[in-house]
Amino acid sequence: MGRAFQNRKESMAKTSDANARVYSKFSREIYVCAKSGGCDVEGNLALRGLIERAKKSQVPSHVIDKAVDKAKGGAGEDFAIARYEGYGPSNCMVIVDCLTDNPNRTFGDVRNCFTKTDCKIGAQGSVAHMFDHSAIFVFDGTDEEAVLETLMMADVDVTDIECEDGKMTVFAPNSEYFKAKQVLMDSIEGIDFDIDEIQFLAKNTIPETDIDRELFDKFIDMLDELDDVQNIYHNVELS
Image 1 (cartoon, helix red, strand yellow):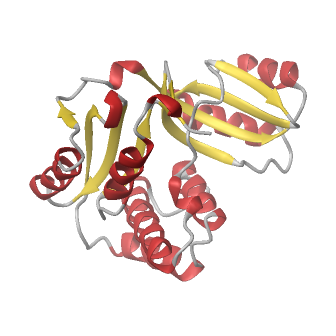
Image 2 (tube, helix red, strand yellow; image 1 turned 30 degrees about the vertical axis):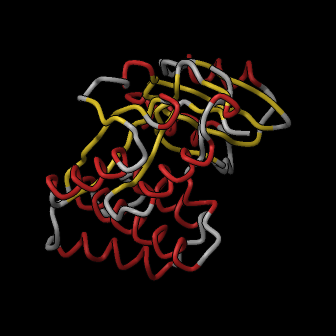
């Protein structure tokens, strides 16, 4: 499957405005995750992983605590998942995941990013079939065979395992996320995930030399600035 996947752009934030957007995106996602799956991090593995990622992206504890407390209260906005697909600059393929309390507004905002950069938003399923919806776990390790055997013994459907520079990367179908994570946590003492999430991985990538990089960056930045946009996936292999 290779390493053609993009880490969350939030971790690359360098300005106060960018940091504020990162905090807002994580706060919304934590709230939705806690409200739907429970506020106990021991019983809600998705919430636990999300909070760990937020901390690694330097989201302040008070932002995390406020989102969880808001979910505990039961009140607040009702956010729904919205996913948009289409073709970006130089005909690259793009999937945009959102959390929204106003689908009409969000669709209009996302469509505007496509049209203002001469791109084309498509129908649902127009490009998703060219991506694998995968759970990804990256952690310290070198014994690929032992990890694979442990997961297989627990009946986890492993798509691929890679080992490079002392880092182990495990790929599994998105439906196996919780089971795979629990097995890894139970079998590897003190495991610390560098990456622990579900992503869309492009089956075929295109090199950045084949795209209009300036327009591509503008397109991604416009999407990333939208409050409702949580994740952006594409098939461009950036250096």
